[in-house]
Image 1 (cartoon, each protein chain N blue to C red):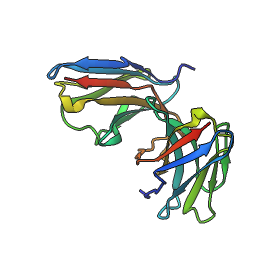
Image 2: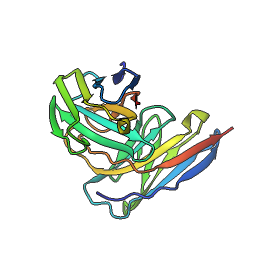
Image 3: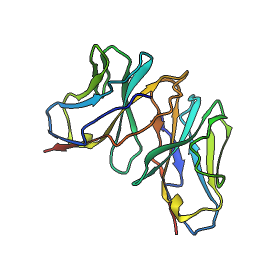
Image 4: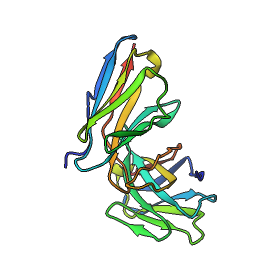
Length: 111
Length: 113
């Protein structure tokens, strides 16, 4: 099993640009989660899906953030326009029952 | 959600058992205890979870007190690769694992040679 796959692993972009982060969950898992981690705020849940349907997006910081899950094997988190305060490591995780399995993360730097 | 309290940091000698405590005195009857860890620069890793019985898997053992107000994660033979931040999380278990995990500051475990 390849585990949760995220791309890119690193992203450096300029303020105002659109950023798209990608995630492939573990095959067969029906829940998908997006988290953000910073030194100041720790690890925060942004949004999660069940069977490709968004269930709770209360953690999404503002309208500049959006997430989609067009099918069971792919999800995106988009930031448009990006700002320096969006710099963080973004993790995707998936689960079936019990524990959540995290990907390696995407380190985003917005200059 | 029940609040958890963990020591900020702990040290352990390589090859010895690492016992990481967690207090969750306000835990309710339908809340599970989950343990995750995060090795530097990696994503969090699920370790184990339990409701009231002790649990064991290939990574660790989870001992939950009879009153469920505290628990201990045991790594039986710690190695240098077990150096990480360990998070104890108490959550209701949703259908299919839909827990909205809330990560605190955890315990920084350092395994020394």
